[in-house]
Length: 247
Image (cartoon, rainbow, N blue to C red; front, side, top):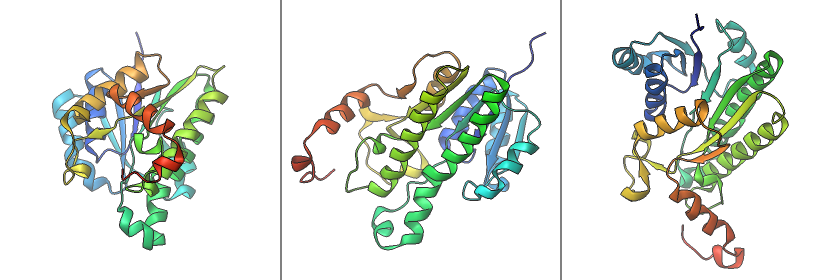
């Protein structure tokens, strides 16, 4: 009899987190999900259970409290087959320019915490001999832009970390997958005017994450392929021209 697989989702309160959990629940996975304040995720947990019938274990995790990471991992009932980090905070670029504490929170939430925790899981999985790590980064990290460079810088760091981790573990059976969603219709972007052709729905992102992690071979995946072309063009614009653009 095949043992039921387990997926750990870091960040259950987001729309992308909910959609990802549903995709894995539909596939028969046992789910462990986290939230900084577990009470804030209870509605999503009930939704996941109702829609998929999956077993869901909700646990507290604050991505800014790196001193608690070891204990969090040690207390898990099993070392998951797959760990997915969808934690992120867009923040306010204008505020981040004048408020160092806010800028620090954005950078640590999007880079430091996720990178260090996935690095810890990488060590445990490497010792076991297999596993899958998925980090949800952003196209904002492909090149710094005036409109969101604090968030973008953090995502650039996370993307680079995942690339280096993947390079180090390439000879092992531990996979490292980077997902770049592009625009997504979520609560985080509800006040933004987004182009429909470039904007994914949370359920679409959740399905892409599942397929990439469990059935795919891609290392870096843009949820909507058009973003790969767009960002390739943006990356090759000479800096002397790029600095004059308003993006």
